[in-house]
Length: 567
Image 1: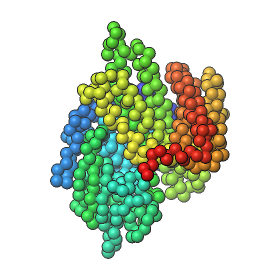
Image 2: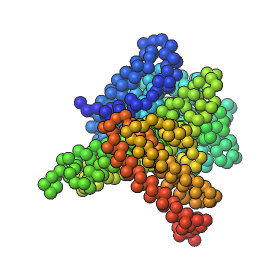
Image 3: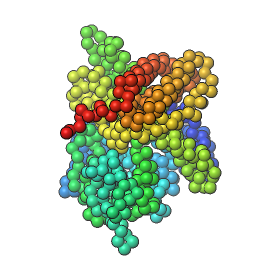
Image 4: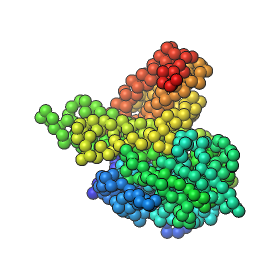
């Protein structure tokens, strides 16, 4: 039988140190009961079994149904939405196997997994059927309820998620509030100590789900983010929310995207008033962005494997096309981008785990302010960096996979046609690539990776010393061009070149993450050096572009937009 928990995913996961994180999750291994873990070795064995089982389900049950899900999609009638039958079967199998409560505590029926381990599961689900990930991944709204909800809310809702009795949605965007969530207008009205939601939400993934976290304006007459609060809406307790329509989308057809009409629908406040956007949505969005990064990586893996398969089967001019340099060059680029992005994604997930660990320790009275501040900063930087990298990479890999298929890739008979459509949304929803640049550029400008670069400099490398020096050269290039940009004191220019700076940071950091792997494992050196050679060219190019723009436009960079402004 096939298994998506393949050697590559296992290889990179096994080189991540989760010992301190797992010990904290397991209360120092002092818990009792049949499901409690008693050592890190036992935990690793259990993770291996859990991932292997998930990989088998994804490869042999979910993946074969993906084409049918894409063809049929969800059904909408009289305000009611139903998933495709195959989607319902997929979710039931994942629920029966216990995967819907991946990172939730065991007391609610969850698996209590580290985020890093659960991210691998999300990636495999995405490889099997990207649209299913949206339903599976949205179980993460339960994590937000667990973090910020009261005990009664958690006891009522979280077991339902773990059992697969409910699915969720994050109802944030509106017709006039997409990326600009400070403009949310849906009203939350308080009457006799109860809260009611009134207004419209649009482009809500699985808005037909039984449980929604809704961002609403709780402070009458307010403007901006300070007037927004987060609310818990449960359809099985109130029927005053109506799904007006589902969207006819380009891709991810198995996931219903809904327009929701709230007609004084009864809801409950989550956490404190006025913290909806500045605290709770940021936490919710960062979790969603990590999941979409994993989704993009899963799509890329699927597209790459389809391309390799087709290149070996398709013959032209008397031989399989995999022998043509133009083809195997594309395949090698795909492989290098996928593996280095996997390193970045798993590193990001580990920092999220560390962030959560220090938050738990802080709640227990631990003095971890310094450590927590650094973990928060790194998780907050790497999350948009991962989404920027993974989603743009997935679109390029899917595009090239279609190209390798030639005309066949344009036909629905081949999976890459669907994969290319599914990839396209990843660098749009949960914050476009441009917004990820906005979120990450501050970290690049302020050298947030300074400690990581210092660890690279102190790393003992014997076989790949020259490559280590080259990577440190990338770091110097990044720091020097950042200094040049900031010295101009021109915000418009800095914003204009921000995407170039973030891309340089992504390439250099992935090289740094790959270096110790290639040093320890000779079988990875050829791919590492291929990526390094690509990195040299790309970083030199990006630096030269920024330099050229500075020399050519300087203070007048803002004038470039004049050609596009309608008079």
